[in-house]
Length: 377
Image 1 (cartoon, rainbow, N blue to C red):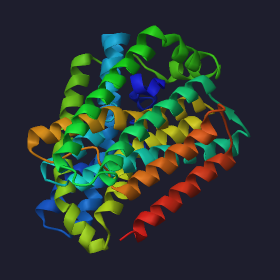
Image 2 (image 1 turned 60 degrees about the vertical axis):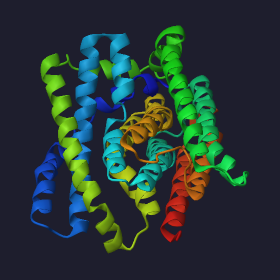
Image 3 (image 1 turned 180 degrees about the vertical axis):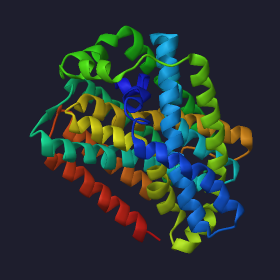
Image 4 (image 1 turned 135 degrees about the horizontal axis):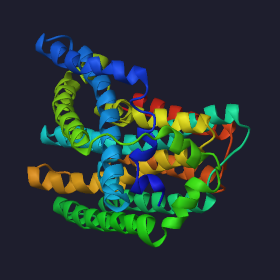
């Protein structure tokens, strides 16, 4: 399991709010409420609220990392593992409460696809243009690949049950999803134990061995963490504001879809993940350009694994509590796209090397998938 699973915001927090553009984007937060109150065009409300989510995601990443630095490695790693995809979690729970179950499922698959193809592809391309061949730990890459295969198997199983059974009781898929969600969460906890305790040296070597400049670069970028009380306040305030901004986004979603003439499937798989994951995409590209592919791969693949093994199971249980029929049976075409993303990513990552052409390969695959969802009825 990659170090991004145990510490997913570590790499992102190094650069997120230091970017002036992200700081200026905080202006979109009050603007999103303003355009809603003024009853502006739903498409404008959707775009502005989506852009407002970007700096809030960066703030949450920074605050989480600073708190983790203050409380120690063990608790800090657990904290980072829990809040690593807080943005996607909040948006999904708000959408789930509005009954947009199909959009939530589509955004889960879309986040995995975007992380593996768009983010990692952009990182390999832009990093490869500057460095002819880049390296990362093949041993960790194989663990990534096996974990992604497990995630894909679990995602495929409910549809397999559905399409190979006659007279299936719909509740059977819900019951299976609860069992599978529990198993995924158990594997997720064990992966934390693996990466933080029993095989911690795998990931410490990953940071300090293969790329000799990585640890030094992190040490140079890291500053002493601010007061923990202030960071907790920032984390809570940012998360609270994110809830309200997500409500604005979700509230405008249906009308925006009609205005654009798009399907819920395309919006959930392609558009929504772009807003929630842009900070991670910036992180992947930045580290790749600095020849720190271990970190770039950890952000992209670790976030994808966390979405399937932590966020999706939590949403299954949350849906049960909210009376929403959330399960792990995803739209077949979206499943096919996830399968393509996992297959292509695994095929080029297990050797521990990358170049710009492999980045182009991932991006062309993402473009093909995006076009397919756009034209899918």
